[in-house]
Structure formats: C-alpha cells, structure tokens
Length: 283
Length: 283
DNA sequence: CGTACCCTGCATAATTTCATGCAGGGTACG
DNA sequence: CGTACCCTGCATGAAATTATGCAGGGTACG
Image (cartoon, rainbow over the protein chains, first blue to last red):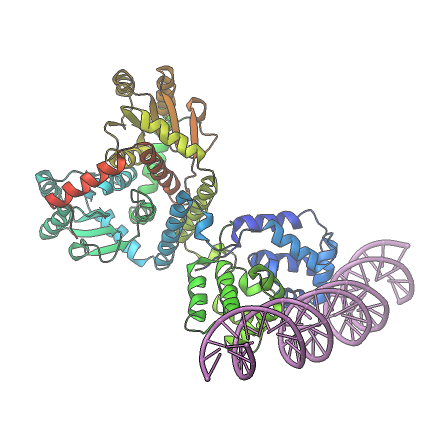
C-alpha cells in the first residue's frame, strides 16, 4: 500500500545529514528511528519522535541542536524542505506521459502485492521447467512479450519454441510440440485479445498441454482455457497499451523456472564464459 | 519522489470519510486540500492545514468536530491509524520477487521525473515520424523491445523496418533503408551491449542517419554514436534484466510519433473498423 | 424590507509541545 | 580509589498549537 514519501531518496538525504557527525548512542538511536520512518519524520512532534525512538523528549531537542539547527522545529522544517515531494498525484501537475508512467507504477504495485504469495509463480515455474520442449505463445501485441521471454528462457532451457504467428500454422506447431514431448505451454495474453489465441489455447488443452497464462485480467477471455492464470494489468493511458507488469511477471516466471532447473546456473555461467571469449559484448 | 506519495488507497479512505457528510463550502475546501495532500495530512497542524486550504485555523477545528471527532488532534490521530503503512521499504519484509518489482517502480519514478520535460521526446517523435522508411534496431535482449515498438508503430507509420538480426545482414539492411529514403533510426540498447549494436550505429551515422537511442544509461557504450539518447534504467534484481522503463519509454516515443503524424488517428480508426469487421478480436 | 439563521474570521483562553536548568549515573583517566 | 567529564532523564518555564466566545456578513424566507 501506500508507501508515501519515504523512498530511497529521502532516506539517502537523511543519512547524508547524519553521517560525519559525532553522535551519542541516544542520538544515534533517534537518527536510526528517523530513517526508519523517513516518510513521517518531517511531521512528527518531538514528543512523538522521542516515544518512537524510546528516548526522552529533551534528547530529541538536543539532537536537533547537535546537528546545527536552532531547535527541533528548525530540524523538522529543514526535513520538509529537502523532502518536499510527498504530494498527491494531483492529476493536473503531471503531463500526459508522466500520468501514464504513474499508472504503470500502480500496476506494478498491484503486481508486488500479488507476489506476496509466491506459490502460484513457483508452481508455474515448475510446470514450465518440466516441459521439453516448452512452447511460448504470444500473438500480435503479445508477440514481443513472448519473444522476450523466449530469448532469456533459451539460456537456461534446452528447447524453447516461440509461437508468435497465428493462422493455420499455430495448430501445426502446437501439434509438433506435443509430439516432441511438451507437457506445458506458456501464453502471454494481452488486449485486444485475438480470437486466434483463444482458439489456440483451447486446442492446446485438448492436446493435453497444461496451459500457464500471463493475462491482463482474471476475466480475460483466455481464462476459461488456462490451467493457471497469472494476472498483470496493462496500462491504457497512451495510444498503445503498455505492458510493464506482464513483462516483469514474465521475468519473475523465468526466475521461478530457473529455480526449478537444476543446471540453470551452470548454463548461464557457461554462456558468460563463451561470450567473454568471443568478445560479444562491450564494456 | 519522491513523488511518492499519498496513493490511491489513502485518498479513497479520506473520500470515504468525507462523503455523505453535510459540509459547508469552507469545510469542502479543507477536505479537498486534505485529499490533495493525503500523504502529509495526518501530520499537519491545524494552522498548517488552514494555511494550505486558505481558511482560518478555527475552521479546521470545526471541520474536525463536524466529522464527529473530539477535536482536530482526534481527527489527525484517526488519519494516522487508518493510513498506517507509511514506513520505510524495510528490505526484509519483501520477498525477492517483490523487491525486484519495487526496484522497477523506482526506475519508473525516475523516468517520470525525466518526462517532466517532454521536449526531447517530442523532438525524437518528430525525427522518427519524418523518416520513411523507419528502421528500428534491437539485438538480443533488446530485440523484443524493438519488435514491440515496431508492431505498434506499423499501425501509424507506413514503413517500419525491424532490424533484429546482427551479423553481416545488419549493414546490408541499414544500407537498404538509407537507399529507400530513411533519415532516422531508432535503437533500443540494453545491457549486455552487443558489440554489433555499437558497430551498427556507427555505420548508420556514417550513412547519414540521425540516431535516436533508448538506452539503459547516459553512459552506455552506444552514447557516442547517438544523436539523441533517451535514458531508461533496467532492473537487475532478477536473474535476467527487466526493461519496464525502456519499454514504457518506447510507448511514450510512439505517442510522440503519433502526434507528429497527421493521419495517425485516421489510420488507427481504420484498423479498428477493419478488425471489427473481420472479428479479429474477442469481446 | 426585515428577521432569523448560519457561516466565517478575529481575538483570546486552554492545552500541548518545545527548550533549558538540574541531579543521577556511568566511564575514563590520573 | 577519586575526580572530572559527559550523557541522560526529570521537572519546569517559554512558545506553539488548539478550542471557544463574539461580531460581521451573507442568504433564505416570511
């Protein structure tokens, strides 16, 4: 939830203020408490801060003086000045682009709260890791998401098959994957949901595949044809949808898949070594 | 952020508190002010709130009483109770996945602050819109980003050419684009930076193209070969990099490009009409 | 047009918050 | 072992924040 002002930036400023100062144990305690409650600190009274830190109220006043302020109110005013930005998302003060970014931040926040329970992701990771080959489906807008997943997945999984074309070929390829031994399929499903995706999933399930879907909503039309649906909202503030949360969820899935693949780490290190030998990357 | 702030949940709680109350104009003004500064509100003194709302201090006290509290301090205490969670991001309380998501939120926040000045993006949008054809370069990890951009860009731009393969073909294709009349090139450059990308950009500039680059840092190795570099950090908390900010910046660029293409809206509507006629999408 | 009512800000009393003098206790050093 | 120094909390005066009585002004209704 609301994570207000605190944030790394405010904490950094506080620590900068404190460091290099000779502080007594009690003062150190106050400083630590202020960092912990960086968001509230600029608004607490000396009594409240003293209670939170477990020290006496005069110690707080002396702490402020020790830092070079005229008194505790002066310290508090300073904190409000240098950590000014805890304001509400006053729609109007952000331009169109910034509003879109903030909408995506909300989506990511929601994703973070869903990930508090990592069990569904872990289950999905195991399902995907166990499938050889692993078909990854994403059509149209979702094609890029599927491609990004497949690119990284291939570094740890021996046989990833990207299904990014629809039409009659899609069913052919699902069939081929099943014949080759696939047990699960990962689908990225973003709006506008192509009819082909729904039909493809239906076919895949009929062919015996366990379908794991990353979709924009629990009520997406693909839900009925998925065994395990992981939701991640898309942003709709711009002309074209933004899919930060689905992409990030894809990477989280990758991580979970790595955890279920015993030799993932070894494969990554092997790639790094070869890449270095070939001078593939700069820096 | 620190922008951070206040957050929808806190605002919702506030509005819930106010709605259904018979409030005078001055009180309505106070309520609105509190919503606007939802993050600070639980910590402001009656004098401060009065100043922010542009009313007298007694009006604030009366406002609290009107809402059924014993006085202003009681209202403030209530706000602190129902909006309790403004604590610092105590690393330990989030699991690995959630930490990665929060790291990406910080990246997006940084992006939002960069977008406060939309001029660079607008300039990039004009450059890209004016180039026919428009080559879009992204290799390896950045290939999916380039593909996502190209997919949407094709809905508004008549000739988008995706350059997602390196090797000797890359130069061939840059040459072809230049011969066909291209004036600019968009590059997605994410770590680990393939040597090929740097070489490709160098060649493109030599061939007369204006290079617009979305990179993970101003100091990326592609910076020297870019005419306009737009930075967007990648997340490194998981086994594989997460590129929420670059993707979002790509969509913002698309929006800016649409603004510079007079018939973008018409093309989009045409596509929607045809898609509906063909029953391409469900729902 | 007048009266009654309510809303609002000003002035000031009541309460809370902040600053400072003082004494207890702990540590370092002679 | 003693002394000197500093840190800390308690108690109290100073300053601030909050609450309430009062008067001016605006609106609704008779």
